[in-house]
Image (cartoon, rainbow, N blue to C red; front, side, top):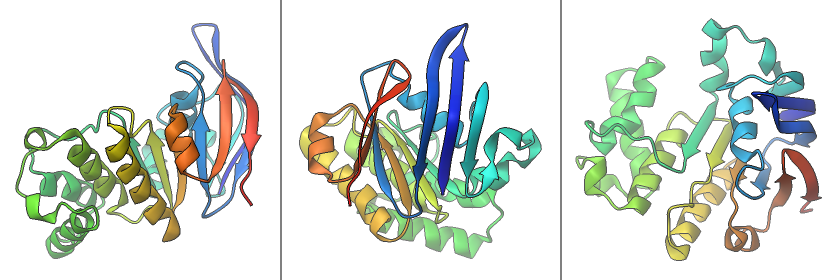
Length: 221
């Protein structure tokens, strides 16, 4: 599903990722952890080609990500859901419209858009607030909307960049369980976090980064 071979990434001559190699199988749930600046966000950005790498090879769903032409990136990204720490919701749209926006981009018909967007909000417990705007919701609710938006198009892969970083432990646990639910339904999950509480609660494989290098791995059988 996801394969990295000897991947390097540098910003202004400063190494961000150094000789990264690993394989994540279809249906796996993997934590990526490490201190601030370890390379977690950079690693996720390479997987959906928000940025490109300097050398090495990144394969996602059998596609060599580094060789995809810019005007073909949509084919990669429509199979990947992404959740950010700061939600990145559209403030002038209702939460239903935020979730529906993903389906509009891929050209779904209006009936399908409305049903699937509502169903996605229902799955995260927010269908009753479909007409609310992001600023009317708590941080935990906004993050649930972001998860619904990431999952509405049934992606094969779900990437999460510190999705619980702004939440208290109880809410963080609820968000983790939503990702685990998606994983149980077959979605491959890569979840970046620095939280030891989250790592302990979720009994999943762990890749640990430090200064752009893999310094430890934990595999759950």
